[in-house]
Length: 598
Image 1 (tube, helix red, strand yellow):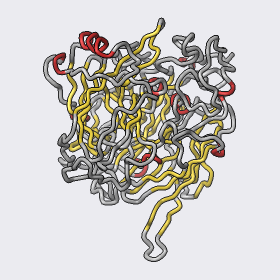
Image 2 (cartoon, helix red, strand yellow):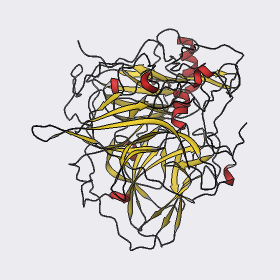
Image 3 (cartoon, helix red, strand yellow):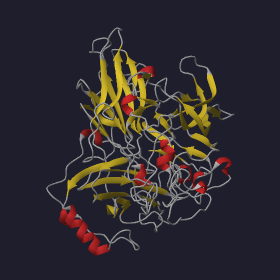
Image 4 (cartoon, helix red, strand yellow):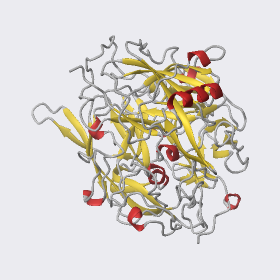
């Protein structure tokens, strides 16, 4: 059996931060007028080894996305680059992208697939009954072949290209899921410029496919963006850096360590409700260092962890500016000294190192409990540290003045229904068996059927003890408020109305208004932009306003009128789920369909 690696034995800040290169497209032009029609890519998924731990430690077997990239230093084309996280897509607004995704995984999954969950099941293994074998070997028919399906998180995407959890495919597309239509995905790129990301989304195994390395950045830019042009106010080139923060645990042989015994092993032999690693990895390196010049940098921050929240701050307490959230620029820059970021969320921040003495070493720190908010505190010397910044001895350059208004964000006006949706836990003898959305399992009939063009309010009523990052596919929404409520009273009355979950009938709605306490609290300034993932705190009702129309629609939308460049009612549909991947894999995900008027 592998021996766990003591995280305190790993030297910190000796790895240099790796900045993922950018995929190089095949530019398709109209032969008659020379206009660019699309940027096309071929991206494959394969297994390889990578030096994640410092030199002197063994390499780690990972999965990663690979393709053609341009070397940022030499400008030369590298035809078959692969790394984890994957290379970055640099997309241009209004220029579509076509990606041929290729599954080249030909070895069994090295992490335990739990077939007692509702999962892809390419071999039609079915639901095994106890007694369950220990892992390894687990269930060989669950470990191989490995299904994948990529999802562009935050993208306004046709459902056939959205990465539906049941649209998976194995190597060579020998086996495909019931929602599979194609592996050549189309991304229209008509939404606002933003920090998006891509990752695997296969039903029931997202947590282990992503942990093995299947994630990467997708930066959507607008050539007309006055903030992002050459010689404009924002840092560019080597001063603009994406940071994918993920927690991992390792064995002494360099392999990833992942739980192999479930919290309720007589029901789910290998599944645990949250994975929390004991080291922090940034851009595929554990506890890296970045040498910075004394000037301003732009960091695109992604929480790509399975379950860990981060509350980030600098060791000297210095402030920074947040200029963007999940779906693009905020209206105004927000001065902050700490940043709370949940799994799946992104933050676009500006950090000014110009006032620091050369040789200064700053540590980006974390103090978020796990689970968040009332779980165990971080270990100050391990999970309490993210990475280090070392200031170089170069001339200082002061940052340029930002405009007072960064972005005009269209107000959303509700023109349709309000939904009350409950987050509820089903407990077993040793902890959660599953967490459910509105008491329903994944396979139950679809209950969320919004009309295209409608704008709805969703009240997320959290009856659990943890915060859940709730993510909706297709749309960018706005956070309206959070409000405390009498959670125990509401739970008692909800169960009396519906019965104990999981439910085997449509959920009966219990209005939450009589249980509310105090008044609604508006979101902090850095949450007042476009969002696709929202933190639903325990004991609170989180209300979001969701418009099933393009983000850039500046007119009042009308229910039944489709303004998307595609028909969102076609194809397998979309999903909404908790972005704690361990929850998502075990029923905390529901399908939804956008309807047409006729």
